[in-house]
Amino acid sequence: MSAPVEAPTPRELWRAVEGVHAVVYFSREVDDAVAAAGVTGWWRGYTAGRAAPMGAVGPAVVTATFATFAPSMVARNLPSAWAMASPDEVLAARLRGVVAAYGRLDGEDGSVGRGLASVVDVLDAAADAVPTLARPLAAAWAAHRSDVLAARLDTVGGDGAAADPASVVVRAWLAATVVREHRGDAHVAALAAAGLDGCEAHLTLSGTGRVPADVLRGARGWTDDDWAAATDRLRRRGLLDDRGRLTPTGQAVRAEVEAATDEAAAGPWSAVAAADRCHLVAVLGPIGRLVAERLPIRVPNPMGWEPLTS
Image (cartoon, rainbow, N blue to C red; front, top):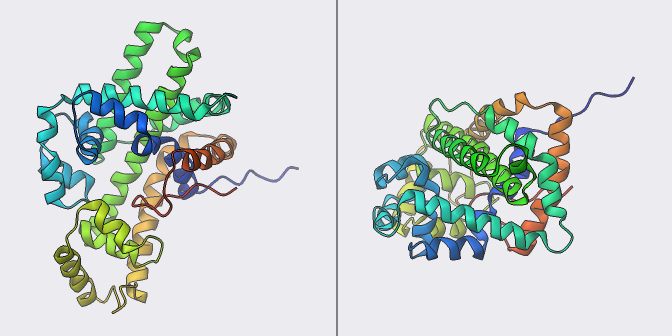
């Protein structure tokens, strides 16, 4: 009798899928496409691009859903972005950039495209199974995914859409995005349940030693005063020591947050057979390493992501 297949953990699945999604943040093709749509400033493009499926929302909604960005940073980017381009224009530009970026990453041998084609049905199955109740970004991206795929199928027609290399990229990227935003929503809920605000969340991450404080503080717009005040709050709760590292109590709180995130993130993958999950990780692991190398993606980064090593 053969041994049962050991399915990858939710965290391994996230590390595999995040590499597919993260192209949108680090490729010049996406930057150029969003700028061509009229949105100036990288952070304005990021904020508008990620929030666009929710419509022309204001800074309060984005601050609440993104969770770990300083409110002042969000307010610098919205609603000004919507005066430059509509949410639909930003979304269309982003997808054009993603397809172009994957065209470059595919190089001459087509290995990336073939890899995505071999797992796109698995990604679709996971995205289809994402629960959206109390998951605002996942719900918005799931609705956008449905709209885009319906439009492409109407235009290309039946099996022709699935055979189109651009359609494989669009399907894979949209599915990966829905799955990762579902995990992100779950993480925000876990942080809130632990009584951590956005700045405190970053301090508990830097307190693990995984991501330097300077990487997190600058990329999310927190001022020195914000950081110092949050540090004081966490020290009073007994979560941080004088060096900014997690105390045993802080480690327990952070572990509870990560466990709750993983537990919630595992839900959609229950719709996927263990063997298919293993295949997904085996295919997307090398693609993630290639993406990190060729774009490149700095590790460590504010997402806390690093490609799978094997």
